[in-house]
Image (cartoon, rainbow, N blue to C red):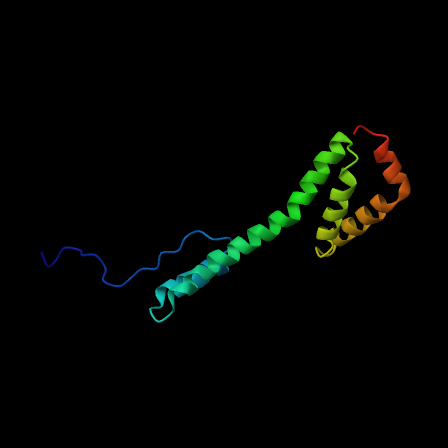
Length: 119
């Protein structure tokens, strides 16, 4: 059976889906190179996890604030301020929304308006 196709002898890189193409390329290169330490193959996954956690940390206060605003609760003021501060580094729109949210919800009229709503 010399003419039959046999399995390739070289190792093929196995790349799991990641958050972006560059991370996948880095992971493929890390797995393919034999002299690279095994811990480096985890870097793309760790970077993807970091990005996901960063997005979650930025999104969760906004979701809680939005839910509280829909229900017109008095506790929403704190969550909007937290969401505004978290959004400040997102230039240019997050900065504008964050500054406006902080400015609006620090005013006494807003606090009184939320205090008269449902508790």
